[in-house]
Figure 1 (cartoon, rainbow, N blue to C red):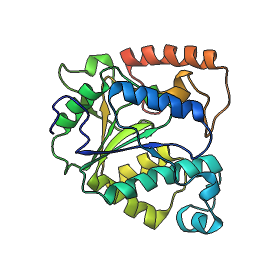
Figure 2: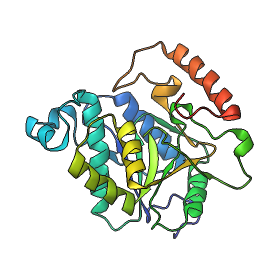
Figure 3: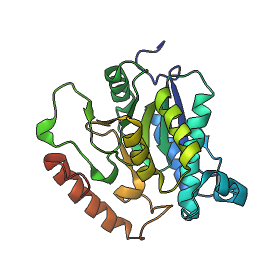
Figure 4: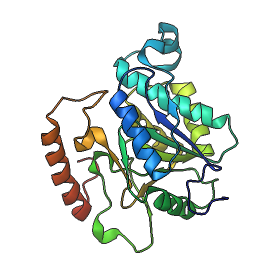
Length: 247
């Protein structure tokens, strides 16, 4: 790494799931948020709903997975993994387009990368607090950033190594995409023997969860203030006590 404090662009393939047209508020937010944190902004806009022909669906998507927005988002994640494998970089960092980054995101990201160690590890790091999942405070250790987990967080912000991308893409080729990408990633990785690691405390938060944006793929629309209050109550309770694995 030439720059010992900046984002390690020479090691990490970074992409942000987005769309070709629409959601301009999210695009502006990402550009502003990433620029002030020093994180490269490269939007991935392939596989919009209009791009998914019946032939593509038949090749890549299971017949009973029909939600257009969820199918599109899943294909974007898979497309990013495949593009990553066309490079010689050791790490792939994926974001969705509603994320907020911690002020010290880059410094802590570098700490997590250093703690991960070898890029040969078959591992995924979840940087966000998706579904308000936390390691309880009494399990945290000074200086430790990565904690083994029994299940995934959401797919809004994660890093994978080449071996994970290869295994996931091969699995998709054989079994297709059959559910929302968050759930499919977790189910695939359990079968593929991928280490699931949570970054603690999280350095990314999802705007469609914390009340900044309405969801773009699924779920019931709720007043944003209500979402924000509900999210924060759950957030601080779980930071202290953790959670039961699927609750």
